[in-house]
Amino acid sequence: ADRAPTIIGSAQIAGHVTEAAAALTGLVAGTPVVSGLHDVDACAIGTGCSEPGQLSMTAGTFSINQVISAAPAMDARWACRNFVTPGRWMNMSISPASATNLDWFVSELCAAEIAQAEQVGRSPYAFVNDEIAAVIDEPTKVYFLPFIYGSPYGDQASAGFFGLRGWHTRGHMLRAVFEGVAFNHKWHIDALRSAFDVTEVRVTGGGARSEIWSQIFADAFGLPVVITEAQEAGALGAAICAGLGAGVFASLETAISRTVRAVRTYSPDPARGARLAEAYQLYTDLAQALQPIWARLE
Image (cartoon, rainbow, N blue to C red):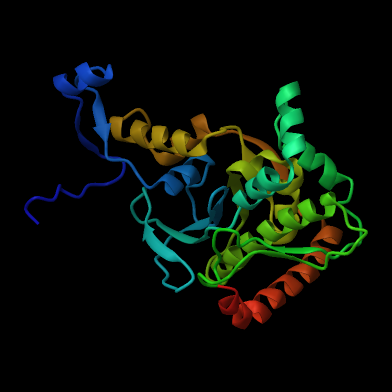
């Protein structure tokens, strides 16, 4: 224990850049070094979350869903930890089942589109939104369990499409991927909402870059979805934390008001929300029904 460093807060100065470190890094000697924070907490701050009721969601490698509270609450479905601000807690429910499912789909099934995108200097994901937009309101029932890399249902769960018919297109499958990922986030968010009031969802990660996906999130959750300006919200949150420690900002709220800017807000569409609520029930029924089968697929 005597070899462990002293525990300090996230926004406290741990030391200063030494002459030796300055020579190696190019940083100015004497620059304050602030303790720092968990990357997903930094993402929450970088999207403007600082008060109870604000839910931060990262749609990237993991499905990260976390809400600030004024008091700790324990549950097997989430982890509860100290937040940067004293007297605030961060409650996080996660699984490795989010936008990486789209990465897998595009990488394995869309080689021609990737090559074409490289030729014209376009994102290989741009065509995805076009294909989904063409079928977004069709009364089709294709489902995707987004468990390529893991799930909240245990390690044995695996991914799969359900309801596919001969008339379905790749656009229908892509829409199912978008909706399946949204449903997995909803599973976590609903768990958090059973204990905490949630007023809005602030989204970062690859999923936030798609307007169609952002609207699906809003419709599925029945909550406003806010997208902020920063492309790398975690880096912004870390910089805000450093600024707090160095005395640049007087408070987290002041720092956020000066650095975080909302650029788009998506309001839930009642009609689409009703359809997605019905689809979500079938999605969860599928996941429950497959639990005794998944072990046999190992």
